[in-house]
Image (cartoon, rainbow, N blue to C red; front, side, top):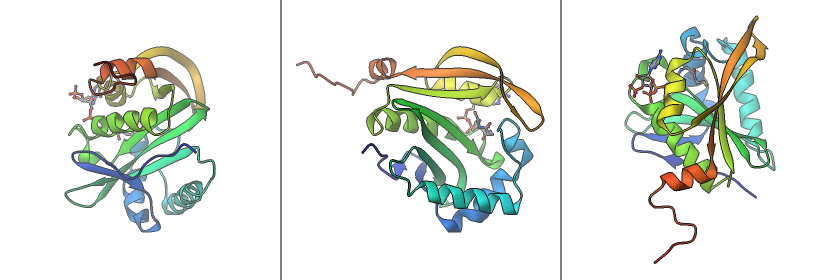
Length: 192
Ligand SMILES: CC(C)(COP(=O)(O)OP(=O)(O)OC[C@H]1O[C@@H](n2cnc3c(N)ncnc32)[C@H](O)[C@@H]1OP(=O)(O)O)[C@@H](O)C(=O)NCCC(=O)NCCS
């Protein structure tokens, strides 16, 4: 069965399973309207945060597991500063997402997370394609996807209706062969 090897460690972060005691931290970032501005949900109140965390903990027990929503913990402080996820949307296609509390924006953390998740999607989940959809006005997230080498593929007009408006979204894609070509240390059939 394909699964992620956790935790995923990066230079500054640990991407790990959520636990019940993360509730306050989850509420701190997901109740902030600046954080959820370009997300289909939220801002969350205390009840909906608890409900969301309950659903998320239940999803950890699903087999086969299709959704890996992970806590983003800072190594230095031990603090949970956000969430990120990989979710199968088709057999070999994995969707990537991330959100961080506003106090840690602008330090390159999302780029660090996205790079690590892309590697995990191709190595551990053996995806053929990693995709991400992002609101056309979400400049910071678009920039992150560009920085990690994802390619713009399409714009979906009225992709979704949420929070009383229609959402126009960009589709970004990273095909497996492009990721392989970008990795100096990846050699599926190593040549001498
Ligand atoms: C999107 C998000 C995760 C980015 O996190 P981050 O750790 O600040 O991202 P990084 O520091 O790795 O990179 C951000 C890049 O966007 C740029 N940027 C920031 N705001 C921008 C804007 N409004 N327009 C264009 N670029 C912007 C930064 O300059 C940086 O690029 P650079 O390295 O070339 O200077 C964070 O803003 C967030 O949590 N937003 C709310 C949740 C969300 O929208 N998630 C994505 C859903 S698709």
